Length: 291
Image (cartoon, rainbow, N blue to C red; front, top):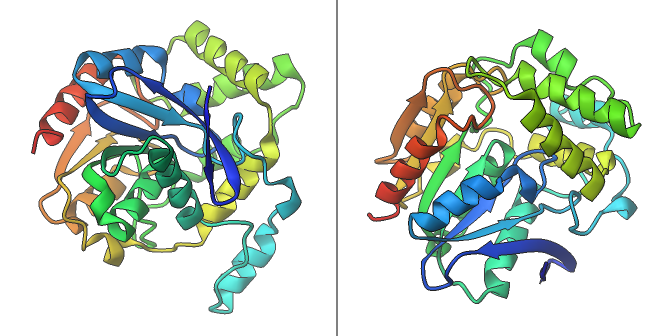
């Protein structure tokens, strides 16, 4: 696969489909590689008129690992907030947004339709309010503004999901499959498919240190709700009714802040992309990308 040079690092990316079709940049969530956008999803997008671009965020997959940046001190990050100071972190979501735009630059694409999920949705929002000329349309899935007034994630889910993960290959895969099931929602969960995904992910690049640095990047922006109010691109906000991480109110918060945004709440969806909802999501993507 090709690599884009951006911000003095390399971002691994892949394109799928006809370059003359509508460019669609897919931005993955916390710790997720480009594999999070499955071949089936990408092929369906291509069949609906999109030129699909998926990539590894910095610090995961085959993109540059920022090991020299060190590990974030979350106690100090919390203490800085308590002191009313901006925490020092290895890099920010703004840096990650610049990485994403660097992929478009490598492809000589001035403007694209932007779709981000979870942390990728936060990065997509940053792109849309800081570089509006690069955005044809904006789609945000299971994400948040970071508004402190929003309902918090379920503590029991957070405790289980962010507990230490065994590094051994088989133990890691089985543990991650359990966690995927935990946040999936009420749709039927295919353990074999989840195990296959986590196996491919582990074998391609097991690098937990990058996840910690990405998590620190998410802590810095704080509440971006005031910033996204300036977004003028056609916007679609998609959220699951059963999301235990970012409560459905987080999706509503985004949609009310961006003028003219459409909100689509999918019953039964958790912090996940069940195959049952993909046709509906793609149908809405086709509509929003035509505006």
